[in-house]
Amino acid sequence: MLELGSPTAYLVRPEARLTGALSTRNCYARIVATARELLIAHPGSSFTVQDIADATGLSRRAVYNHFPNPEALYRATLRDLLGELGDMVEVDLPREAHPEQAIQDFACFATALLSSDINLLIWAAIIRDDGAEDWLAAAYARLVRQPLVRSLEIYLLHRRIRDDLPRLDPERAAEQLVGMIEAASVTPSLLKTGHQSSPAAREAEILFIVASFINAHLAPREAVPSAKVMPLPLGAVAHR
Image 1 (cartoon, rainbow, N blue to C red):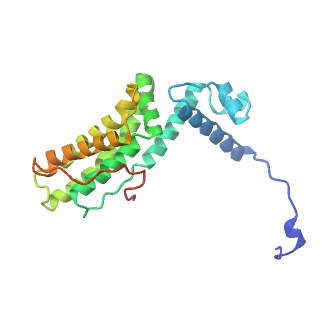
Image 2 (image 1 turned 120 degrees about the vertical axis):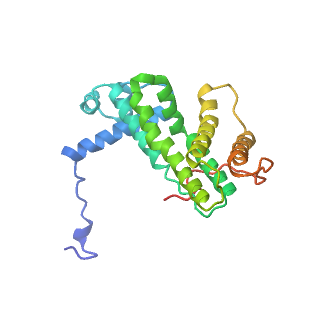
Image 3 (image 1 turned 90 degrees about the vertical axis):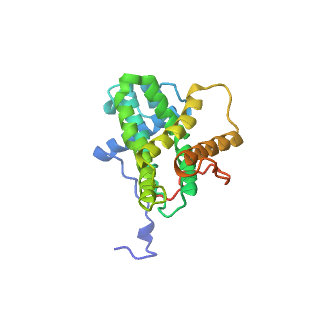
């Protein structure tokens, strides 16, 4: 064992070369990471094997060793992006939070998540590829939409059991709110209507969605939340 301060401890040894399985995993990760960057930087565009080889410094043969064609790499990259997006969905609304505040927090979190570049890229792929990548729509529903609905449903179910919201259907209400947020977050960007909503307009839209939901499901018709809803960054709502 080398003692601290021993001259031998400071000998520079040549860095070990990555070989075998470790080298294979490293190349695979580099290829997928590069494809991710290209897709996010240029949404709606495609890439070639040569693009990936140039960006990674690998040979075309090295890329083809991992992926038989660009389509296989494209699918692997979408799976990687979808997995990352799914990891962000685990949101836990405190059961004791007041319904108005909990709905506002959830709406802000979901809006930030569904407006993210990754989510918009995946949505564009679902729409553009249609049946060619039908697995993507099913995986998106399982990893993103259903967990969002379920997290809100669990909160609403708990409040109903406490008799705060006796007439509420938690599953239907949660699906409705997620659908409203999804439409407001995704549709304008994918339609590319030629105008960008200002932060104030986006804030007003979130407030309108929250107010509509609360008036329909949680409160008397005349009650509208007066609190100002500010968009929150991802992670602002407590994670499990």
